Length: 394
Image 1 (cartoon, rainbow, N blue to C red):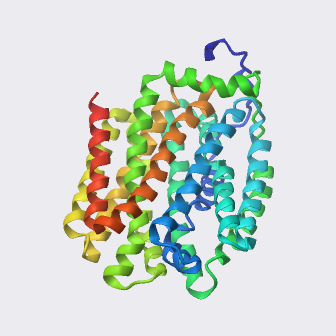
Image 2 (spheres, one colour; image 1 turned 120 degrees about the vertical axis):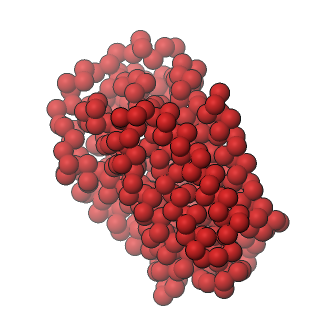
């Protein structure tokens, strides 16, 4: 099955341009939606104590959330190429609010883990907004637009840890989920009245769209390369954020609010995403991807050598966030140029791989820390970047 044989809706069907105001709204919406996946990370020590489980099992709950997200990307994103996007995004925002509410009211660990999986499955709004932003942006500004939305996503991820860590200090750790649920319901209303109508790009069946993902993987070597490198970057990113809570608790006797505050430091890297998008537009994505791998390697060398000092953690974190953000923006700028009528499916392939890397990072990072402490988790992260560098060279 060849994606070029699909009956496509003309590009003129989308009459709205990407204004600065709309880009800001989409970036904020992407950040709020992405935050749902990460409220749990600074709470792992409290969750482990609450359910009387070990840290590795607490990390597994985060892994289930990210696996749920990967399943959502696989099963839901192909719909975005064949449905009207605004309505689809509003529906998913509402379902995400219901998922968050379900976790808040869950009475036991079993329902809590199901709700965590459901939260991941419904948190695909950012990955619906990125192709929409690429579709609405002018070609010469596509990297910058993607960078702005990606900046919103990473800022949302980082601030989610600050927010949840702070709330957990004064209330039950579940309180963050009722607040987040309310915010998602409000967001659904806002998006309904601000997003432009975006008719389907293809007139095909869902089964065809889903199966064509394999054709997309086969037809675009650049997509395969970007996906593996992106997965390794997020693998390393998740290792740090999963193990930071335990490192601060074990070495400094600091609680979850301090782990969350590190998210504020990471905003420095997140805010630089539009800048990297502009560089990718001018110098090419190969330059920025290669640079990002080297920056991540340097960040983990700092963690390895100086991770038992606060200044070492801070400097390493800034570099890690810059490297991961630069890598992700550059990869997505590259892949969104491959086929405009299959952007959501291309995004699906990239993001599934990306977040599977993150899920493996969350679980293996907790495991490495439990068995080999901070040094083991840092060495594991460096191994991921060696893999990324080999794939980049090839």
